[in-house]
Image (tube, rainbow, N blue to C red; front, side, top):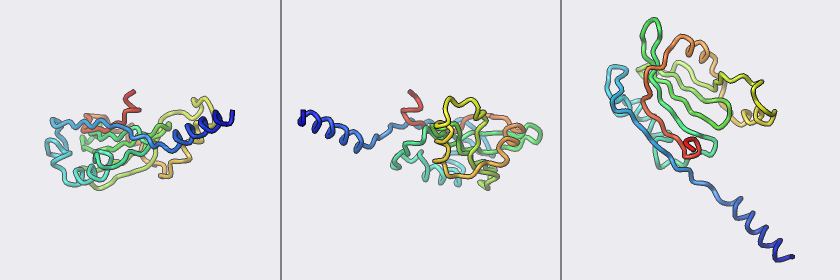
Length: 163
């Protein structure tokens, strides 16, 4: 019996000590045109630099909290001004957004969720959001009401998002 307990303990310790290496899928839309250029991932210097420091860089280890990063093209419904919106999706009911002008200047950033907290099945799921330390996005609700999604520029997803 002592041997069985030893082997079970050893097995559990091994499982807890293993760090999962998530596979990633990177997709870049070379045909998208925005901000006066085609293929903005490679032709907008600020966006290219951002991608090198993000999970688009395959040398970076993926954070277990992250499902993926998405880069979208949004357009103002009235003025037709274009914006590049970066979305980092967690496995929590919120996402982290960075809203940029074409110049790379940041309009806003922070967590935003359009999901009603009352829809969560348990308080434990709501409490998971406490692990995300970024501030709330104050203007995201207004932005997404006055702008329309035009295209997906690129995304990187972990295998747990795709499954």
